[in-house]
Length: 635
Image 1 (cartoon, rainbow, N blue to C red):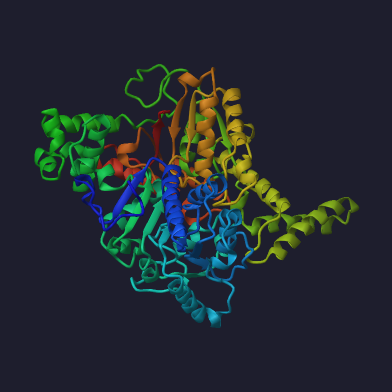
Image 2: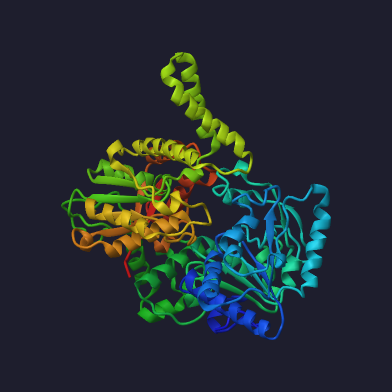
């Protein structure tokens, strides 16, 4: 199906009837990007053959990176020329020098412009360095240049957590034009890792307006990963509102949402398929529907009645089983109840047929993979403690150093302590340490507000985070030698939005699997943005799994947890590990051991309370908090 020629189509089939803008779903971001790049390439060639220019609107961030990589491949391997192309970028941070690695000018050079034959005079990006008094005229000039170029033939968009396109934050009107805007708090928090701390994120940006974007002849909004699923659904199926600027695409005659399966997962046709057509009522679908119905009506599962099913679109479930609601309720209640266990590593010597984890072998060798050091503590700190208490051999592997998340103040504090030690010791033995500490202070001072760390500062930050990670793990009863740091190459040589998976990443993880021979593995990143460190670390695991032969591979079980990604929904949970108030506070304390931690991460215990509240509402026992896991079945 063509992406660029929506021709006003919104509803393609009955299953898509809740969708108010055309939405195409691909298996992965790679396949979607290749399909879009192929159509854009065909458009460029067609217009070039007719002597016409193609005007492309471009986006930044991690979302369009696979699309740009495919365009580069088409240029280098299939001769696609960009000589007839003119480009306009959506936005730029205000105040960043153009050579700053997080400026969108630099981003576009790194990700596309330096690799194709695009005439530099045809490249247009808002200038975040113009004096404040000149910004208004600069924005009007940007609008004029778009009009003089003949308008945008294709505008590529991403979508932010607040639903923004470009930097059109909540409140942006449908007729807004290119302008300076103050960035939303959530937007700045989401960019904090890019800038090594939210304090370093610019507070303003210059962006095309919603009205400017809607003037494009074709609009394609791309979204990848389960973390985007909720906002994609609001933009596609919700009402048009200036609180979600992406929702204005519903009113465009040729707009398409291009998403992967994870980002599409909250759309009605995938999340509640029984509401839009017949479904196969297998066990997972029954559980999903009954849990949904109970939550929708705010009833415990066992109090649902036939009328509840029939009056809310789930009557087909009862018809398919020829059972009354009572029998269906009992079945699903038992299945949800059986996910609850205080023995995440399995309880020895008992019947485990209705328990999430096997009773044997006992004790188990358990491998926990943490993409960035805080992820495992955020996602399963309580379960880590439980596994150690119950006698299992637990190895916590930090896949990356996490040094990009460490704030400058942590490195400065270390350097200043060294300097003060040298001053009080009055010993020549401190000369080299003093020189090193001064180099750290000078490097951080020299980079200024928006600078980047030299390698030796990144190294120090990684070592600081190692200490914090070991300290946090000790709160969860892990010993010093229970931890291992892999420092995967993709992270050490990259930056946020620029990470690239390498074969060496998978080989490092495979070596751990072969050496440790785990009976159970805990991993995360399956729901993350494909270019995030979590997603790449998860890919390193899955590729390592494929290359792991022999040993305990056949009997090993893999459990997925959620660190910084969206929590599991109740129907997705295969194992629920309860926590007492004391255990929850212990987990909170472990997270607080990380100096460079944001508000969302500190709120992890609150998310655990929410899961417990959901189980309580479904009629289960009332717990203080629950950590949730889903079984991963390899393809």
